[in-house]
Amino acid sequence: AKEGGSRQHRRYSADLDDRAGEAARLGVEMRTGMDTGQFRMVYQPIVALPEGRTRYVESLVRWQHPERGFVSPAEFVPVAEQNGLIVELGEWILRTACAQFVVWRDQHGVHAPQRISVNVSARQLNEPGFAAVVAEVLECSGMPADHLIVEVTETAVFGGGTAVQAVKDLSALGVRIALDDFGTGHSSLGLLQTVPVDVLKVDKSFVDNLTMAGRHAVIATALIQVSNGLGLTAVAEGVETAEQAAELHRLGYQYAQGFHFGKPAAEPDFHGSAVAVV
Ligand code: C2E
Ligand code: CA
Ligand code: CA
Ligand code: CA
Image 1: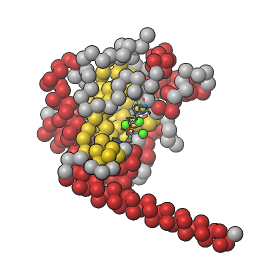
Image 2 (image 1 turned 180 degrees about the vertical axis):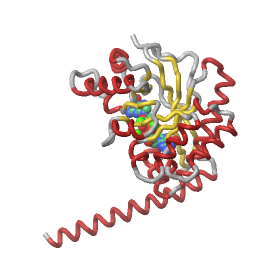
Image 3 (image 1 turned 135 degrees about the vertical axis):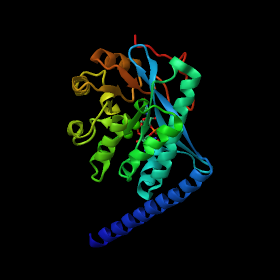
Image 4 (image 1 turned 180 degrees about the horizontal axis):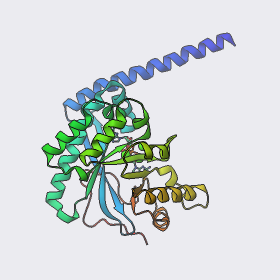
């Protein structure tokens, strides 16, 4: 048993070495990728129910690597969090999204999305002067503060550090605050008492199986009640079917996002793509 244990231990540390090595390689390649324009932004519609018109968009980063091909942000964002590159990448993301919003507003007028949301990671939020960077980006891009939504997660805000103050500073600028993946953390409701919040992004896990009788619908109903009671905007995430959209509408949800309404794209169709709930 002892020998088996140490073999297992060796295999485990080899795995760790592999993983550390892979993260280090990815980090080096990210640096090159940032310097050579391998990153780009896509935008996913957030629609109003029941008519399905695009009201907001969420910005999502993409990395097209010359050899690896498409690398998922679920893979490289955590690495960038670790090595700190997310601070520079995140500022580029913010600048790109705000500039895009202003271009769309000028091109599409009333059909343009009313707000754009940008994901901000824990590391960014805890970076001294983050709110000042946001203020500068808004100023340079001509983006009105109250049309920007910053999406933060519970872990980012409760991770200690200055994140709570940063969220308060952003809110004071007029920027809207969204709690991402809402309901999946340990203290989602507690967070509502700690930071100023405007938007609850109700996690996909509550939308999945919504149309089967059971606890998912009960929780989705409780969350919309909390949201309405506090005067917040609830957005249901990860809506993949017409049935889910109809059920969310029935429960009182006014905003939804998911592949059913539109996948993330460089240029979403704001004019003719409405998917109405019937
Ligand atoms: P998230 O912020 O929760 O973003 C939602 C994710 O769900 C996106 O994946 C989106 O493409 C995906 N999604 C949207 N609708 C559906 C649906 O109907 N079904 C399914 N199965 N998935 C759906 P993506 O773009 O791969 O991003 C994954 C995560 O990576 C994001 O989760 C976020 O945590 C992070 N991320 C993405 N872009 C950024 C960024 O610009 N900055 C930061 N800091 N993190 C980002
Ligand atoms: Ca998000
Ligand atoms: Ca989310
Ligand atoms: Ca997520």
